[in-house]
Image (tube, rainbow, N blue to C red; front, side, top):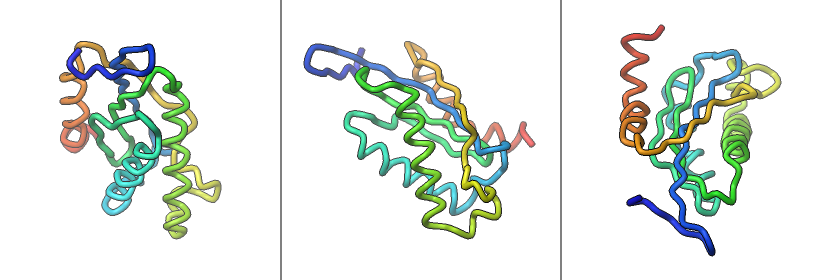
Length: 140
């Protein structure tokens, strides 16, 4: 474990692959909005003590991120905070985007996908990094 972290009585290296989509899988994460969501997520992660973005990618209709999360935090809680706060911040800064995301300000769908990244972390990181290229050629 080369990236081992430690708390008071715990040594850990917990990396999770988290994916979420905009509500109704709308293709709304493009251009300036994509850059803004990346900066917002970096800011939010910096505020959470111990959470770290290992790799991330914002595609047109979904967001991939590899997070290193201490065992004292629930993965669902961290993912929920990132999804919810980023949506609130985007809508407060850009009220004109309400037309594309709906009146309820829901930029993201209710659930998300989470998997642990064990010894195959390099493979998952490469997958996340190449998501944009894959969706450009193979997706719609």
